[in-house]
Length: 186
View 1: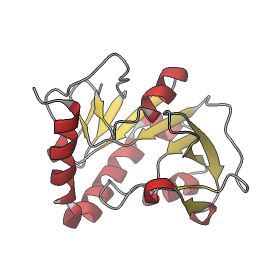
View 2: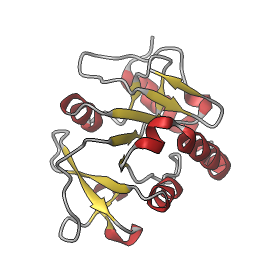
View 3: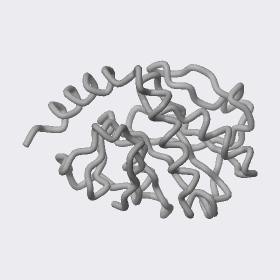
View 4: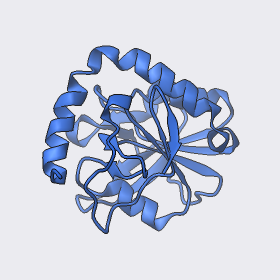
């Protein structure tokens, strides 16, 4: 089996080759997420803001607002894998930060401290059939998901789903994985 670093390198290159399909794939993923009971019943959606080669989350964020949900986006608080979520009410509440990631302007947005009735949308390069996730290697979501009990949904291109991924004791699987072709529980 490949190491996490070897998998990450291979999958980053493969995902970059899928950029032309991003819009259609993202729309199909969005429709599947909107149909999930756990998404429909959530009052708060914790959602990352996608990078150019990830499943696009802006339409998901906007649909959450149209459905009367609150939306919170992560802010990396240090380089040790810790993050907080801040409520946003418009995409203009975001600013560019480290690594080109758009994060809430913490001077304008309110920090979330209550995660009841929340669902967490989780990024990943790849997921496997058990919900294990290969992220970017810093452990931000693993630390967050270990600390709070809530439903987590991983978004991924279907072609990047693997049978098994290398994992370690710090990895926290997601509850549900959604691709443009399928949804399955971890």
